[in-house]
Length: 426
Ligand SMILES: [Zn+2]
Image (cartoon, rainbow, N blue to C red; front, side, top):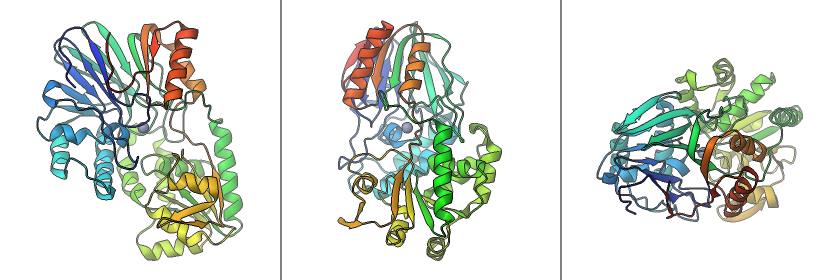
């Protein structure tokens, strides 16, 4: 796609009426900025956002490390490198996530490690609260509360103020402080809608129910497997158990270990670094096959990726513990339809090597989300200052269109759910 100079324009290159491959291009008269460039993992092969010629860009901003916001970025560094703004913590996490993505993908990925390395050489670290000037564009960064190192970005160009929320969470979790409302008048708001129309349970109630359920199983002398994403959820679950003085054995496995070490090196990004440190010290970090076998034989909790059981050590543990009906599998993140975790939750069977096998261990889902639920999302929208045009992205088709309609009707703001490839003058 090419955008000509002139009035400020917004082009949606991905993430329009879908969750995945987020990419928004802001073009002013003299400068142009790309916000995120992600992949849509799965489907069955990864989908990339619409093409943008890197030499048309002055800078790129990454809101947070998740692959649906970052996985296509190295493509932009094959030929014409531009400065890339993100937090130092996002950069460290992204390094692990991209390696994992390249190693595990069964499909061709159109970039290589050398492109990833070139990308990191052009990384410029920013923090929540930082302001950066790129030509006549001013970028202001703020906490997003979604995953460690995540940002919201205010883009000020040619007299327009555009807020891109990225993925946000406004409630405090054990790991992160919730995002604060932006107190400035806006001309444009680009907001996520992952859970538009869906409320999450009260976090404290959820934590209590989770810990009680874990204790019950462990005190029965058996094992709870918690499949969890490596970049936040695994550590949050550790913090929850520690906050409730859980005094049984906890094991941590997979990439969650390396990411935890990265977290320990970045104290300023966490709500309660003391709790995080204590939780990570309390856990036994699994080291090799012998440890894994032992972990399954003793009562305790095993926290291991992948969060949707698409591979990783969690699947190996599941294989070992599936036959004992006293064991439990507690899923702690959203399970995308079609993923092994979703199949397990809905059928009680698991696809080992494409063969569905019944799992005797009990299975339960706990709604630990890192995205705003409907109620909080509405609070964010109501608190917005000015009379901005609202673009709703990063949600299923219906979630995006319904939220846009509600914003127009109830808040009287011009709102829409753009499709990929659509361009708007603002
Ligand atoms: Zn995210």
